[in-house]
Amino acid sequence: MNIKVCGVTQLKQLQQLDAMEIDFAGLNFYRESPRYVVDKISGEEIKDGDFDIKKVGVFVNEGFDNIMKMIDEYDLDIVQLHGDETPGLCKALSEETEVIKTFRVNGETKSIEELIKKYDDACDYYLFDALAPAGELISFGGTGIQFDWSPLSKSRIEKPFFLAGGIGLTDVARLKELDHPDFFAVDINSKFEINAGVKDLDMVKMFAQMLRK
Image (cartoon, rainbow, N blue to C red; front, top):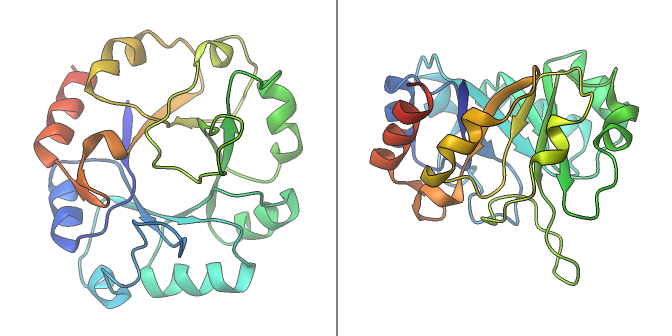
């Protein structure tokens, strides 16, 4: 099972995740996020790092030109679109790089298939994250909220997908039981943090060992 650690804000921790053979690292380019990476790690530091870990740039309702600029500056391998991006923008970006499109899910989501159908030809991966409860402000990840995974098992998805949303150490057994041929990667974030953007790497290592056992 592939693992993505999202919201990385320290170069040393990125290097350590690379050494631990974590598959993906999320670098957040959403300015409103406490895990915004631009003022914490420079593109030059990333380029000098010679990383094997796949660097995923996380964007929220950003324009094509700015995303392409960050791909170049930070040597990104993949972009994750975590807002309300159109299939057209996803398609345009997918002609330049690999694209993960995020969908926010809660108990009121009636159909996963309906949610994703317009993006079938527009991206390379899907990511399913929790939608904040009704009445709360929309949040774009890192909330620690989890959603009911059971609809995923019954859905025809036909594209590799990442599962996110409040996943912690206690979820390993359930993750192993999640039966879907397109389940590609687990995305972890806030449940493995000391502070926003600062990971507890001992916990990450334990999670990886347990999941891959």
